[in-house]
Image (tube, rainbow, N blue to C red; front, side):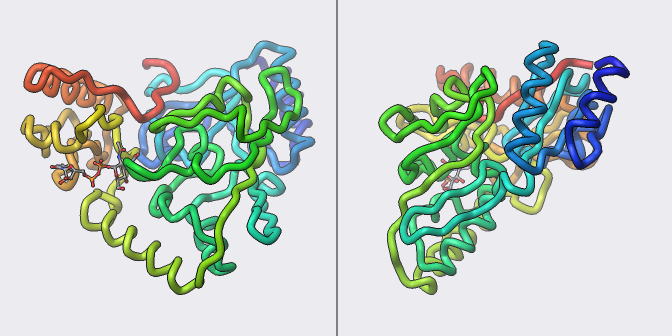
Length: 303
Ligand code: EPU
């Protein structure tokens, strides 16, 4: 990015962009080299201006949620990394339908909905991501997904135009959706929830939280499950049976709690994490003949 581009970009937004910002400060696994520019937008207007600027100059854009399902490589990310804030994190309650900004922190939404007696998103308990990120990868458990509750999604298209996409055009699969084809940025989403007692909803959330605490390394830097579950089986079970728990490359270690998680013991590099993930895949392939597919998103360049 040129000096002139930095100056122009800075004038488009109220919050000063961060240049050469280490991605390890913005991913839950705590790895990743510098992003050319980390730009936080607070309004749809700012968002449109930044996207227009990037489109005109051919600068790539990566929308960052909470960085909780992301492995950013050590060489960092060229172009603009966008974060959604302010207006883009708002929740509007209207009886059963709620409209939520794409940058909204999912655990916050779950609690707010529960307080209002709105149920339906409990499958996302413990998913430390944004609404937009969760929709793109259809987050949830192995059986229940956020996509099941969506009515419509407003996106900023790859051409920089706002567009509302209705449910019948949205496709959700296991940890997948067609949202990346439909848009560059998830601006907001409308969910259809059902009514229940706040206490009953909170109890369900607490039960799911306890399960996660007991079965996942939630207090360690990690990026959630590394691989999708293959049809009819569980990646965690296969990796565990293949003897991968505790295996380590540098400071990246297969969690001793759940074998489909990699934890950062302190100073892991993305290259350690990726080498370990490949070793996990090769081991399962050699032992069970099953090829695991990545669930995490891998972005950026090698060092
Ligand atoms: N298992 C093992 N060893 C392990 C891990 C799991 O034997 O090291 C066995 C368990 O004993 C259990 C089975 O595998 O019988 C399934 O384990 P778990 O209930 O933990 O579910 P999972 O399929 O491994 C899925 C989602 C998680 C979600 C949990 C809880 C995927 C890839 N993972 O895990 O989602 O939190 O259910 O609902 O679908 C994520 O997407 O990042 C994620 C963490």
